[in-house]
Image (cartoon, rainbow, N blue to C red; front, side):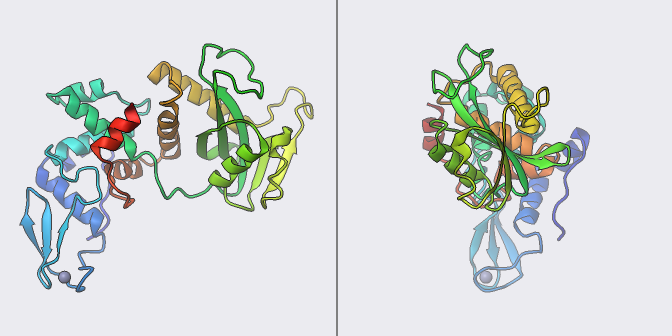
Length: 306
Ligand SMILES: [Zn+2]
C-alpha cells in the first residue's frame, strides 16, 4: 500500500474523507505505509476486530493494534471525520482558528468538545524530535508584549518578555524558524538558546552584543556584525522579518498574549511557519500520525491552559 496522498483542495478533501471507513483506511495506511507486518511474529495477515474501536488483530499471533494508538484520536468518542476536518482547518487556516470558529464551522454541538479538540491538535504543534537548524543562521533576541510595543527594546528585562529568534538563511529567503522565551540576554542564556536550536558547526550571524561571544567556544562559526558597520542596511534581515511577522500575527489573531500563554503561541507560530509549504505534513503532525509521541491527557491540557 503506498503512503497516502493528500487532497489538494477542500473539495478533494471532502470527497476523500467522506466516510468513517475512508478515514480508517487512511489511518491504516499511515501506520503501515509498506503494508501490515506484525512486530511480534512478522506475520502479514490481519483481521479487523472492532471497526468502531479501530482495533486490528494479527492472524498469526493474535496481537492487537489500534490504529489510533499514539494519535490525538485515541479513545475519542467523536467521529474520525470530525477530527480530520478539524485538523484540516487548523493546518490550512494560516492565521490560526479559535474554538468558537471551529465549533461553528463543523457544527459541533458543545463548545467544550470543540475546545478540547482544538487544544489536543494544538498540543501536537510542539514536536519533541525537532531537527536542529543547520547551515547558516541568523540569531537575535527581542522583547514582546506590554503596551510599550513601539519602544526600542533595551537589553533589560522589564514587563515585556524576552524572546530568542533563530532562523535559517536560504538564499535571499528564510528557512526554518525557532522562537524561545529567554530568562535574560546573558551569555549563558544565549548560549543555551543557540545550543538548543542550532546544530554545532553552523554559521551563526548575530549583532555585536557581547552575550554571543561564547558561541565560538561551543563550536559555532560565529560571525558578529557591529551595529554601525553599514548604516542604512538591516543587520539581520530574516530575523527581523520573522519578528515583525510574528508581532502582526500575535496582534491580529490573539490580540495580546499574556506571558504565561506566550510559549504556546510561539510554538504555534513556529509550527505554521515551518510547515507553510507542506499542509500534508501539518495535517499528519496535528493528528499525531507522523511522530510517535505520547498523546496529551485532559489534565495536561487544563494545566497548560491555566
Ligand atoms: Zn503477529
